[in-house]
Length: 254
Image (cartoon, rainbow, N blue to C red; front, side, top):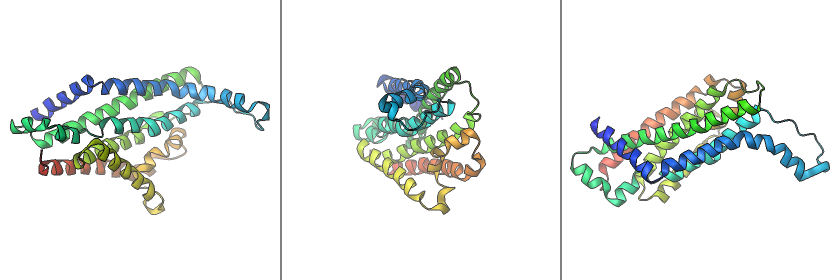
């Protein structure tokens, strides 16, 4: 436990010194502010673009539009930023040789993987909920409707999928020689999930569904219980990836 504590402390200090934490705060804060603002100005932009030639009336924006922007930005930008920043989290340590002295002084390699997993999960949790609460605050200010009754139930699947993604980053970074290979492997895993989702028999177990139905969860149109297999599969894969990372790093030449 001491190894995990001190290495986790080192990870957080390094994240601050390399400005990765600052970058996450800025990007996710901007995303949180942008979500309701984009929902508000989108009808005006469409009206200005098409003018009187637009054949239909544009409905007034609601809280659903704001939350729709949130989930769109989290999946299309937020998760990608996490992958870009941390794709070399272990391969970088190995290539620079920074682990050699620590391991020879008694640091267990398993502590490296566990500490980095804790670090990335906490970074993802903090960043996502920063954007979430900022979006929630601005949405409450600009929209007074009750179209979005289940905001916490809707965000839970996204958070779980994010945990799966960061543990995938840990595994691919352990396997790869550099951050580019790790990023490619992580992208390949996500593409594989999309391919598997083509087959209906695997859909309820596929983690990718956790970022595809958030708006239905938000409105209560889909039951979260129906996606429990996908959530359990995501958590199982996360634990599996951490264990595999430990096994691979234990056998890897530093």
